[in-house]
Length: 256
Image (tube, rainbow, N blue to C red; front, side, top):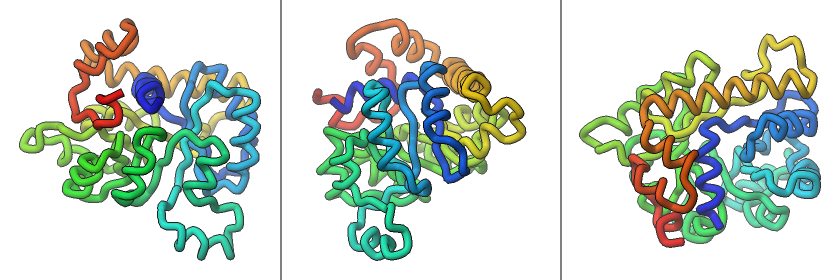
């Protein structure tokens, strides 16, 4: 049920991104689990997505994994496999057990229609119109790039009625996270190359401490803006929290 993942994503507010940083992905996964996180994004820029996904689903079946850097054009994926044999198309990732897709590009209507009821879909928008079109087609959240927040502010400006649930990534360190929520973000994400920059303790406990700090910062930043939503989201069972959501709800979530 995509609604369950939708709520977990919403509750978490901060999503760690596994980037191609040369670090031990399994150690990072274990740190995220210990920190209480239930959703992670594992980018295809890493060559070990498939083997790590199988390991996660075996050891931590309750952990949701979103695939990052996804492309919904099979011809493009097939072309680049000549140089990057680890690249997967959407069907291959679904067969492996992935729970959702994040992209630096938009998704086609065909892709959204096919997967919106079973997988969390987070395409990227570079204009207000793209954000509106993607959300209207059934995307669950819209990704916009930081750390510059001009587009986020424009999409969530008063003349547009704050319709769009934004997922802001890029440059989201501890200082920028509150700014992103003030600009209209519902959730943010940061790669481990950023979150662990300058961190001396790279043990599982050390990484866990950093993840808890980022998570707490994101949750508190959003709570300051939407206290009624936060109270309902964290303290109530069922779907009553959806009534407090300040943006458009996709049909795939409303109809379940």
